[in-house]
Amino acid sequence: MLKIPARPLLLCLLFLLPVALDAQNGAYGAYTPYSIFGIGEIRREGTAFNSSMGGVGIATRNKRFINYLNPASVTARDSLSFMADIGLSQKNTLYRQGNIKSGNNTFNMYDFIISFPIYRSSAFIIGLTPFSDVGYSFSTKVTDSEIIGNTNVISYNASGNGSVYQLFAGGAATFWKKFSVGAEVIYYFGTLDKQFSQSFTDASYNSAQGVSNLLIRSTTAKLGLQYEQRVGEDMSMIFGATYRFRAGINGESENYEILGTASDTLSYSYSNNSGISIADELGLGLSLKKGDRWSVEVNYLRSGWNRSGMESTPGFAVESDVNFSGVATNSVRAGFEIVPNRNDIRYYRKRMAYRAGAYYDESYYRLDGNKVSSVGVTFGVTLPVPRFFNGITVGIDIGQKGSLRYNMIRERYAMFVIGFNLHDIWFRKTQYE
Image (tube, rainbow, N blue to C red; front, side, top):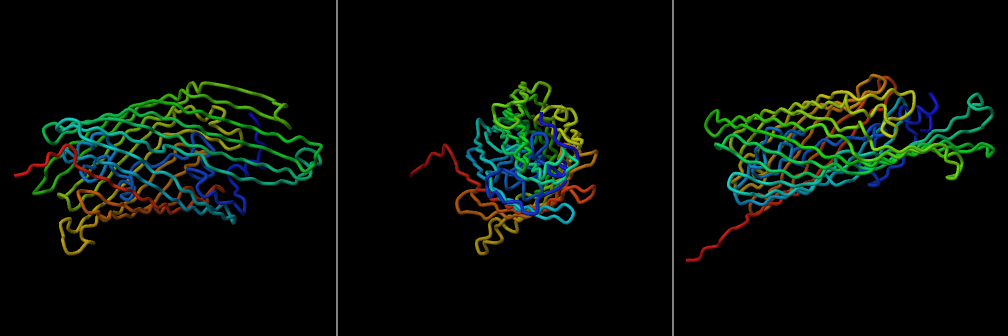
């Protein structure tokens, strides 16, 4: 691969943002300089319902919303109900590194999921959601006669885009009206493209370019269980657990370097991504709810990205002075929901569901041994639509990723999500007297 020069280009790739960074307005699923490493920026999973509660859902049992964070929760429903969820997101981000500031916004699909009953206390779910995104485009110029003789101005550029999606399908069943188990199969697919180049104002020097095209294909499974126990009148406590198995990536990686024109290919390599994997993940959750009025929940997740193998693989790792290494990650999330009175016929606002939450997520890598963490708060509301459990969920996620320490990039963002919760009753037989 094209070797990235030491400190000058290192500043271009990660630790320095240009003064004027053009907003791509929907050209990327996500936009962050941190997505240059690995498989990009991993999404926080969940629908708009989950997102507005800090991302909780492992111990959620709510018959009005689809909750795919735990396969076992799909049985929390009316026995004849068909449910669907369609979500969209829009994210605004401000970047800062030292005295340099910039901004960007993106727009993307959040999820598309449907769920329906199978037999008695069992149900089925199928959906498509983004898993990770690569999105960045930045450059810097260096004038230094000591680099390669008298080259005048050298321009270093880096760009990347692409997404990995997850298509999943699963089912669940409830036993003894309190113990639910579920399982789902997950298929990951997508392409990630990364380019690096250097060019000279002096025409006597040839430009150089490095390209990595990553084809991602992988299959895994996820198990889930939930146990609900009554602890008082119309009040219950729910324990939930999930486990997603480690998944080897079976796609392809194509890496090549070009000097001058395409006919001057310096090197080319191809591999089947052997030894690269998406980490396993263990999730635990505990919630307390009072009927249909309020609930509170806490989740903990741990993923073993330290065994992903990405830090030593061209295309996933970037050849530079930045030490990129996969690590085991920890996440803590908490959320709260309250509905003043679902059956109020006078005041619409009392039938609305109000939510708030908070989260702390660690990224799956360290840079030069430094953590890159995200912390934020969320708020949301569901506006009920007449007939059954239809509704429109609107939420906002306000947070920060990274910090100004160690000359790194700090991202402050506000992400807006909207979800359309569709609900209908199947197999009804109308009776006439």
